Image (cartoon, rainbow, N blue to C red; front, side, top):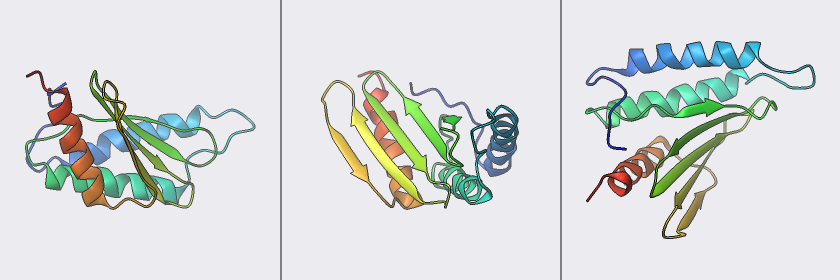
Length: 131
């Protein structure tokens, strides 16, 4: 919480490099009945994280990136007080969920923009920073 795992500024290239390595692992590790993340899902995920690296020049925590095996992707930031989940469909639609773990607060944005995701990550970091 509050620890930056990506260098800043100009970290977009590093973010994408790390993300591409994760995509490669996810594509290799699918079961026979699963579909690896689609190019549309990967492209949307790249856009979200590249936008974060530009909007948050001090850096941001790299999410846990996974898939349900339906061509989709999930980006997850979990903290003690707040969680942010970004679901990216196989067609590239980005849905955002903010969850206040202690407060019970929940907010869903079905078609989230990169700015809305960045605001959610700012909220995540502020919520999880020790007071």
